[in-house]
Amino acid sequence: MVTYFWERSASVWIALLYVLMGGLLLIFPAASSTVFVWALAGGAACYGVSHLLRYLQERKNGTDSASDLFLTVLPLAFTVFALAWPQTLLSFLPLVLGSLLLLDGVGKLPLAVMALRSEMPDGMALLVSSLIPLVLGAVIVINPFETVQLVVRIFGIGLIADGAADFAAVFTARRRDNT
Picture (cartoon, rainbow, N blue to C red):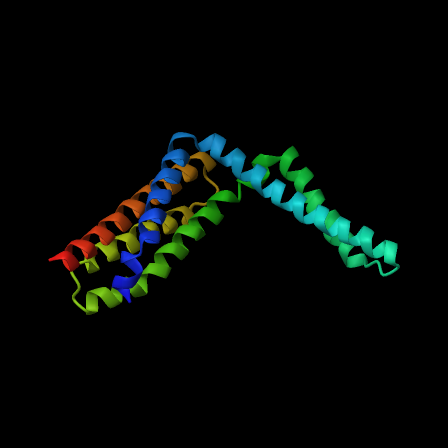
């Protein structure tokens, strides 16, 4: 199972994506934070508009629902809030990003344990690729509101390290299978 997971070409592409995204977050933390808030606002606006269209269609048919109207107003209000006061939303970003790193590390931990129990040569690389996001995520979650840009950079470093460790695990497994 571990070999199947790490030898898929998708694992290499995900590792490459992690390194690329991590580099962008590390180099441009303020811009990345702003783009993150814009993406949240854009997603909320699309969700609100879709419910508005549903509400208007149902109103034409005489079956309008107050819940669709509510699901229009709330996301659109969030959109306005996010665009007007992005720093308020960004103050919660460290907690979210730290939690994502923790989830990534915890998700890989059973694979690492299984690889180590099976005494596979790529077990150590897999353990490192689990522990790096786990430790960095814990550091971020412990101090979530100190500074957004530092957290974005730490998250970027975490993605780069995670991607590099994933590459190491994939190439170790492939080298082992080729011998």
